[in-house]
Image (cartoon, rainbow, N blue to C red):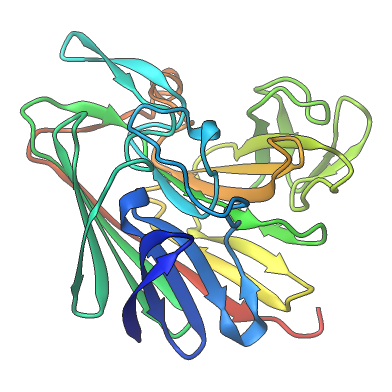
Length: 315
């Protein structure tokens, strides 16, 4: 593997490269992974910034006003909200603090190491990326260096490219799906469906392993109902004869969401499997579901996630 400093759409970036794959990381844009590319199939997995460059976001800005693309970290929440901490209200920004944060970059033992000191909650946030053949490994450590415990949610906010014939690979053991947003096709939030298929309130058969077709002009989000026990998920791309496999620890991430826009959100076409620590998307929801997690003073949470390109033949 080689690690090279490059410019990516006018941004300071670092390129991780092997004979079979490459990844581009933007330190000053939240440590965003802007590209994960499979050289063998000439296939870009991550949804790309539709603009020629990136706008300057500040902590607290609205996520949807900026470039929703690539792989960001959602921490300590997804939905903007006010949280009570030690008896005092504190504002958690839209999609959290990390996506707009400037990280310091160092290269150590063939890893891109990114560090950030929180302005919001006094935690330190480190993530490291390493590329081996066609697998991108990410390693995280989040440590509370303040003297107050705070509630948190971490979500894997990794936007994939959209293909109308792609398949969504949910974890083994998935039996039920909960709708998370008001939807013309899935009805009200909270409605429960059988997986992988069930009729919707409109009388249409919905296959949860498929994405909406591009003429639907829709966006949806739904969740696996209950705890996930198999930390292997991903996407199957028949045209590219490629599967993208994501692996993680279900003890850290027992819940899983899925977001898809087929033109309904800003005209974008992308989707995202989202392993998360709590159910679902906000501290308020995780309190209601009794899944909220706290990071206590001096405590750290450590985890690893890998993304791998796999070949499929005659699909």
